[in-house]
Image (cartoon, rainbow, N blue to C red; front, side, top):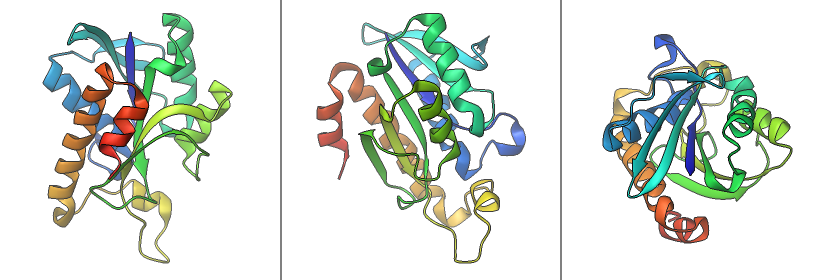
Length: 186
C-alpha cells in the first residue's frame, strides 16, 4: 500500500492559499485516479483506490497545518502502514513558485506542518515533495503570505507545479524514491 498526504488547512477560506498546495495535489490525484477523498478517518479526509495495480490511500489532514502530525500518526497506527510507503506533499518558501524538490529527509525549516510531523513520527526521515511558493517581500508577515491566494501572475506556474507533482507521485508508485528524485529534481 502507498499513501500520499497533502498538507493544508480545511475549509473554503483556505482552499486556494499558498499553504494548501498539498491539498490541491491530493484533489488532482483524486480526479486523475477517480478516488473519492471523503471518508472521515484518522482526523483526516481519506480516499482509497487502486492505481496501476497498487493500493493507494490519499489523505488530507483536517487538523489544520500546525497539527498535521497527529493525523498522520493516527493514520499509520490505524492502517498499520509503513512510513517508507508514504509521501508528504507541502508548500515550501525556500523553493521558487512553479518548482518542486523531492527529498527523503531534512529539518522542518520553519514549516509548522513538518515540525508537527517530525514530532509525531519521531524522525526527520520521510519521503516528501516540497512545492515552491517563494518567499514574501521583506517586511511582509509570513503567516499572512502563506494564507493568501496565489496571484493571477502565478496561476500558470501553480498549475504546472501541481501537474509535475502529480506526475512525480504517480512515478513513485512503480519506482523507488531515489529514482523518482533523480527524475524529478531538476
